[in-house]
Image (cartoon, rainbow, N blue to C red; front, side, top):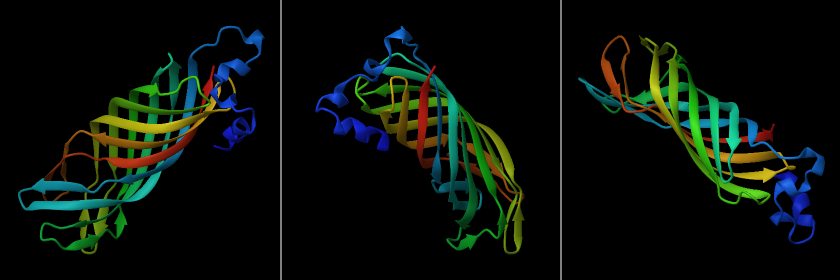
Length: 218
């Protein structure tokens, strides 16, 4: 948010000016079309699997996330179509008997998602504006084969309902570009798995995340 420090060092009302006020008059009417890109990290939420033997809890390591796409700003509402990637790795599980196991190898996980999202900028004419948003789409979940000492398990791939929710803060760099920082929740619909030994029902593959990025008007 260094970009905004100059705004605070200007006259007292500078931060209240719309970003467009600083645009050269030769630009004419500004389009609401923009491109967006963000990068950050995700923290998968522990998952509970239920099957005939009972239930177990599986957990993953934190991982990498990114999102790119295109949007249109109707002020104060924005619409976006984006591709998002969340990558992580299976870490271990608490078995149906309550014993903790660590996976010894494998378990690379990636979730590729396509979202249609709607956002509401709370202060669209300010240099600093908080925003909230929700999105829905499809998520392609791929989990590679994995093992713990003495046992190996089959990986799996699933096409699932995907959804996300965000809260963030954007800062105008100039009349058409903004940087942002945001908190993200992403989840999926429920799904079934077969690890080669038993069948399990899982409610969701979800995660919390944080991203920083840039929106550039076209």
